[in-house]
Image (cartoon, rainbow, N blue to C red):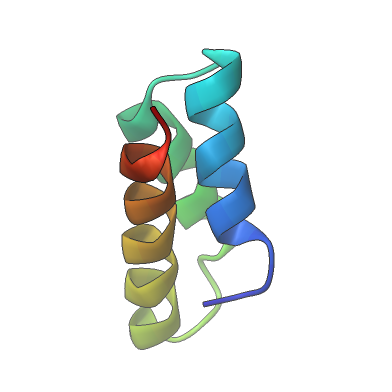
Length: 54
């Protein structure tokens, strides 16, 4: 994953700013020109960090 994308996922959970699905769709647009493998790895990292925050 790209550095700090997991931290963004955790921040979304803590802040309550956006729901996970909304944030992931926005990040897909930002990462859109990268290879699909990179996008997928970042989506997994974002979701994992989001889910690990309690």
